[in-house]
Image (cartoon, rainbow, N blue to C red):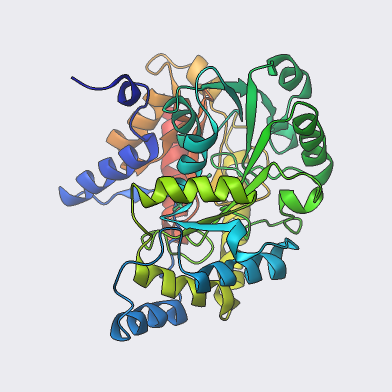
Length: 390
Ligand code: PLP
């Protein structure tokens, strides 16, 4: 009945865990959800007010398919201010979240028999974005002891004459890894040599804790095959508003706009008005959230690394940790995979995590620290109990 296209993709594992947590909560269980991929803060006041004002002022109709000119100008200003990137509004496309932007870009650039490099562990959606186009995701290993930077020998081995794109996500979901400039420049050099498109998914750009963030395109302003993807979701706690944007090559932006016009028409008009305030208004809340996340990162890393045989390098950004439980799983009589461990935590302890299997990393679990201090403490206590039981 279904097209081959739909059979090439699978359900998002992270959204599936979120649904499972909601189910348990509805049945009256006090769930500790450490699987969440969104800030546990409300959208800042000034942004909410801008949304309300947009409704009252009648910004409730279709906008241009690729977003309003005012929001494109705001995104250009923001990238100039924060990222040292210089884009005109026509180099920018507004989409229904960063996910939509990345999906569209894959659709307009990739097809069979193209190959697209994805660094493993990867965000769950990257392989599906690529597969649905008919192109092939090709996975490259990374080094957990160096912020999950690429294994360059593996990268060189995996490049072929079919390689059309390379997807970078620093800070990363699920690892929190942040690549240093030298690493990024090395990847950009390789990409240029083989004429590949570079996708830089920068949705966690404001959440780096140990070094200031540098947008990848700012490291080589002569490469016109870099597409930058940013989003209001994580930076401004606006996940439900669904606003993300792409900046880069005009022709690609135009093609993405054409696809968008024939699929979603336009991003939500009210959310677009609020996003202008997010990008150009008071940025105080961004640094407040970042400070809280850093404190929680330090707490959860200390807890994890104090557990016997748990190994978790300190991630430089985002709000995830990605510890390795291989030793526990290999020595267990009752569990054999990270999936089993995630299910045990869920069913016996009501702690929600996401199995590393979903991100291409057996033996790992992803915990999000976008959760209250109390939930983090209780979640880590229950994890410790679990590791003693299995
Ligand atoms: N990219 C990464 C790495 C993510 O983790 C997410 C969300 O979880 C997104 C993109 C998409 O976010 P949004 O569509 O809300 O902008």
